[in-house]
Figure 1 (cartoon, helix red, strand yellow):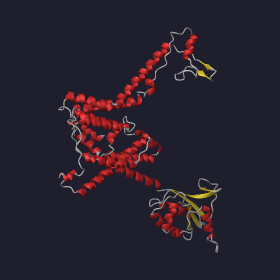
Figure 2: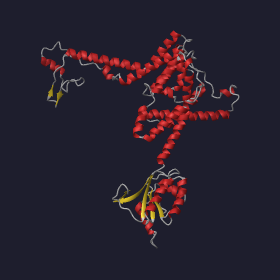
Figure 3: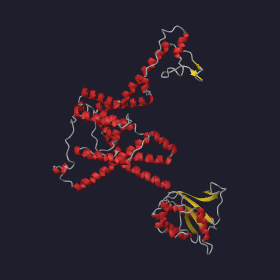
Figure 4: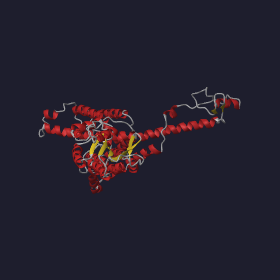
Length: 503
């Protein structure tokens, strides 16, 4: 959106990846702007904004049935009395089921009519209502075709003012380029100073950036409109488009934010893309001359308005109310994109998300368990739960890694300090999905600090049990088996204190 300011004001701004720098350069050269271009762009922006707002708030959306269904017409001239008129206006549920009826019934035998509506009033009201629906349909269609209306307006203005007074699109080459093999740059001696290896590295970098940008935009729009996006299909689609397009000397295809914003103004299905491609092909083949006087300010206005409507302030307000931490991530990502550009902003957004995830998981839930009936529950939340004096049962919720394992172990050690009669600790691993290498190494230190207090795991999932076993930690625990229940593990720990008892 900011990148279009130069075209709107008809200024040659230095190329930069930083949006704020573009705004600064614009302010420095604002005195050299073209008045005609500024006026055309401003009018286009206002008209498009009014169309967009009117479509959402002022103009109802009529259905096809309201436009094409014929109203019920009754010939009252041939009726001689009021009873005949009532019979015509009020139909039983079994008669004329295709048409609306006036009245109510408790059953098929008790059908009571309301006071009949005067025929002329009903007819005039129906005609007026249908006329309004047709008018609404026409107005919404014009609003949907807002970019086309702006282009037609711009062409008329550009032709009237002249290309010397306003910058126009100019000559657009007609037709398609002849197909060539993608490596024609080397076979035709066009590329001489760059090695093929360098081109390959740059191509891989472009492919990565293209995919990241496209999938980020696709997922964002899918989240907004409630549908799913398959990253694999997106990757295959971009790859096929790149492979086929390479024979026609095209730019690397990607999901452009500006083009997507324009498309999202009215498009709802993939049929819109088919129609767009068909129109582009027809224009390239026979209609490029008609675009000669199209001002670049008009095109810039279309992109600016479309991009502005993609800014979702409502979601920011919702995040601020419901998920304050994620709102700060959104705000940091937004500011990073504005200050650093799209690609750097995308990378900064990923970093912000990772930092937020680490902050959330830095302090996992660690609490002591007590027995309530046949279940083990949070002892602090359930004061009636019973606990053993010689055995502490602790539960850790969440995977343990280098960022949170130390905190979890400190909470467990604090429980040992608070209870001087503890002889064993059982860690309920039901919700521990994984442990990293740092946590496994830290367990050796914990075992030394706890000695002679015994340590065991219970209810470990198969993956975690495998990790503990292959790391060698299972042989250092008081009970090597880590998948057994809490009761069974406690029983085995107590059996270790009885000489000659094998459990």
